[in-house]
Length: 289
Image 1 (cartoon, rainbow, N blue to C red):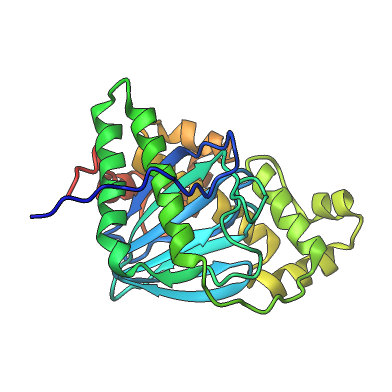
Image 2: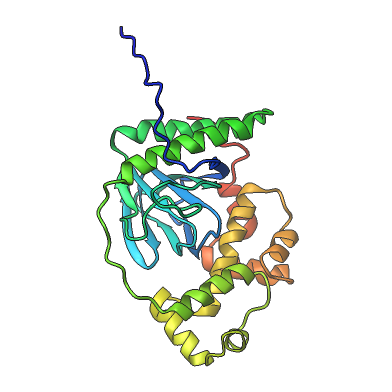
């Protein structure tokens, strides 16, 4: 037995009037072929916890192999991709958090200093982080009037814990990247559901199609047009898993007017038809563990 009186003086890492808000929660698991190609978030930080398995995250063109018990921070504006390990499928919980400012960083929605290594071991915090995300999921499922309040309080706690884990993390050496290629991938992320061609990119950025294609593939390992396709299909996977939208509706949302063309592309790149993919991986509820 014990009794502990907490200090009345509170050390708050947040700037005044900064109140973190949870804006989404995801749980990726049981899919050895799971990938999500390069993308970025303009307004939120991703807090990731690896419950099990292994995977590869690319964050701003640096490759990180992650495993059970790892935590990752992906701040706003970081271009990143995810790929599960085939033999040991990744089991990852991820929470998107926005509307906060850390006192010693003084940048909105940024948890790490720019040169901080974004992967660490959760250590003693692992079980709490996992249970916190499970509780957020429970609140989502219950749909209480207080769901947002509960999730925002948990998000604030998670940001504080991740800050504590990463405050003494090692630094990474900044590498120069082609700024116009970064601008192009941001443009594609904002417009991938519209018609995009090399010619259009060339006109938009006043750079030759050849140079765009060559530099883009050198940095991201994929041609711009194949990236557009992969970006569309990544969103289509989420829509198939998390909504009951029709195939026609999903095809239109991600940029395909012809649902047959969409289906053929999807099958070619995933070895599943869209409806088979939904049947195999969709869950109506992700019940607490």
